[in-house]
Amino acid sequence: MSSIEILGPDRIDKPVSTLAMVPKTGTITRVGRQAYTLMMFVAREQGAEDEETGLFGAPLNSVIRGYDGSTGSVKELKKHLLSMVTHVVEWQSPSPAETEEWGACGLLSQVNLKKKNGENWLYWAYPPALRQEMLYPLRYAQIRRTSIAQFRSHAGLALYEICARYKDNPSHLTSKQHWHWWLPVLTGKPIPKEIKTEFRFFNRDTIKPAIEEVNEVSELAVTVHEFKVGRSIEFIQFEVHLKQEPSVKDSKAIDLTKVARAIQLGIDAEIAEDHFIRYGELVFAKAIERLEGRLAMPGTPILSRHAYLKALLKDRVIDKSAPEENQPNVIEIVVTKKEHPGVLAQASLREREAEKLAIVRTELARLDAPAMEQLLLELKDNFVERNMSQAVMKRMEEGKWESALIMGELARFYWKRTRGTDWSSADALPKVERVEQAGLF
Image 1 (cartoon, rainbow, N blue to C red):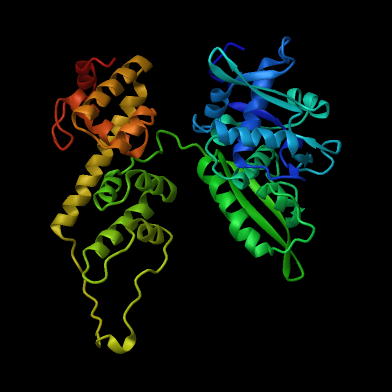
Image 2 (cartoon, rainbow, N blue to C red; image 1 turned 90 degrees about the vertical axis):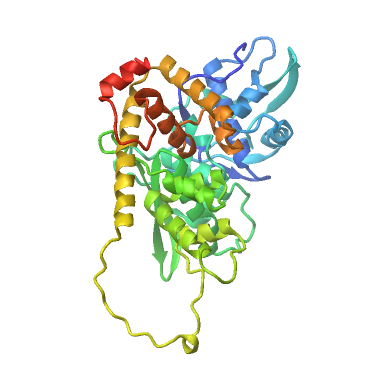
């Protein structure tokens, strides 16, 4: 147990009986579920309990980092670890008759936190009924560590793990269950004696956000099918497919100018980039244009630009038009409008920048690891000299150079580094000569 980092393959084979957990005495949290999966992965990698302690073990911070948590969240994780011992859950497979029923038990039978060489170490043991299933599952779902680390809700994480079980099934469909069955499974909360909520609220508050999160952060694409009994929706079923990975040949260059423009309009850099990724280039660009136009209009100022932008992205009507009695009589005349030369020039400029960005992405993909590392070090020094914003420096420190904020700067820096000319220059050396002159190959 000398390893400080949790290493190994990205894939985790999670037993199907641990996918649809129904809590009986307490709530299952998103952090608890993520940590529990990482601990199962560690236990399986170790193969057996430590001879000295009789427990599985790992550095506490390595478990936290494994699900992309904050290394300062030890106090929070302690609370979740305690619930794994004290709270009882009922195990069931998302597919009927897929596994044998063994009743209910705790997630862990024991958990300890001890200091070892000045570092917090986590030790744990499984109940006898679970140990064999956790270490040597007969049926399992293939999930990704990198995917589970990105979820920020229990409902999204639980739906992802269940749907992962069916991504390779010929039907690509989960089993059809009453929505009452899904209620505790997705919310992570015990079933009340009397279910007072209605399906429409469960659908609005839990199902739809969970589907949106799965589709956003994971490798799966999920949709829901609803089945009525009479006039009421009683059963639901999910259809799941693996997302199609876009090929380099078919991928389009990303226009980063709108992200930069959003920042200039007062939108936080991280929020702008998240919206760009979530809603797509076209929707984001249109929303920024509308926001810019609204800011240029006289009248009542916008109280929150972030809220206004989000409403635009969701295509909600924001500014109400004046009442009809206050509207002047207008005769509409259809006029064929010619594009302004400036608009055409801007479109041409965007096309040239897109072509350049595509070239840069192709060349970056050809760099070996040492050359790429050297390039990023030089870019970081350049950022320090230019006193770049904290948002940019944070992404650089985290190694997220493919993010929209960094990629725009990296493309310009690389272009200057390999061509000897600024990004806006129309003249360029032949591609092979540029790369060789830069000494990157």
